[in-house]
Length: 261
Image (cartoon, rainbow, N blue to C red; front, side, top):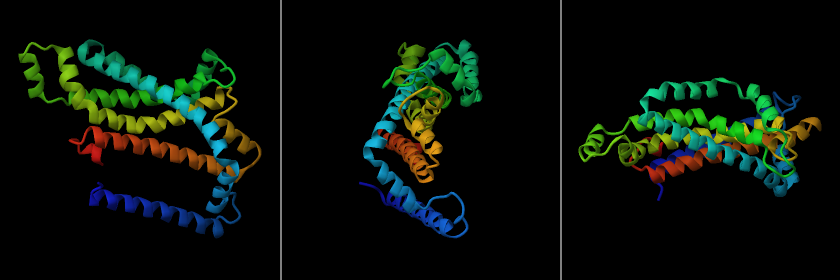
């Protein structure tokens, strides 16, 4: 059962969304009347005209690419973060790789990845989209995992050491449990980024289906309402990912104050 604080927060969030929609509607009728800004009704109408099958088909492909890249990027980040605890000497190298992956703009590396990976076969996931999704989540997960592993209680680590446990036993018995809130917080940010990375990868990945394809078609047809409908759909998906991992954090790590925020 939801607590009064959570119900209050949900009510405030709903009121905020309704307020934004109302402001958007008023602006399209007044200041932005002559601009190419569609009304909420126009966007909803375009979404209804496109139909559920349209969104399920194209968003389903992008979600598949994002999920695959998210899993690869998350696993690589957690494994490398754990290695920094087991072999502290290589921590500077791993952290430098993580920082480099974050500093290189995705729009700059996307064409390079496309040249290396190539065009996908018809109906298959775009390798470029999957790779960019993995890169998008890698940095935040590495940093969050390393910070979480280092936050382990010293007394618990000493207990494991007293009973003959080494760094590996401390990692599996104490550090990973302590790192769960930080890992889930990183994934809460990384999941929407993976979806964004997959869309960017589709732009250069030579795909025949996906969110990027629908945006290109809407741009070519000057379909303003359709483009806004797709964009808002992307926002809803990203928000759903964020909320999903927030819920997981609340259920898995109830002892953490960060999980409840």
